[in-house]
Amino acid sequence: MSITVEDYTLSEAIHTASTELLILPWHTSQENKVHGKAVYPESASTIVKLLRENSIRVELAEGCISDVILEDRRSIEWLGPIIFFSMDAIHQNPVIVSVTLNIISNYLSNVLFGDRVSQTEPTAKLEVVIQDKRCTKKIEYNGPVSGLTEIEKIIEAIKK
Image (tube, rainbow, N blue to C red; front, top):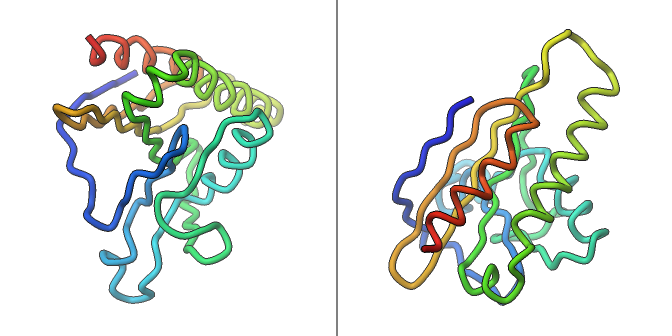
């Protein structure tokens, strides 16, 4: 398992909305010179649907599912969307991070363990962006599905 934390700069095309969390694009519409549409991982549509079903207010940072490009990168690993939490959202709803990570972890366990291809635990790649008044940090996770909860510990440390 590897977890890295680094400074992050939000694209000028991204406007943080008054929602609990945002899904950031892999490439903004400004960066996508060919099609002029934001590019998200294919998994973004599923994650948005699951979070909404669990009463979490979530939006795409740019566009809506019907007018963005959903990119599928075939791999034995699950490639998740970039999830953006503002410190304001975390302070207003302290369980938002754990609930979100549990929903994703449960989904992955059901989908990836249900059709067990190998005897090893499936891996996931997920990025989480945290922003407060002082700075913006990106947490990159690459490891077993069961380790997604480690992201919550890192967010707690960043909050302090």
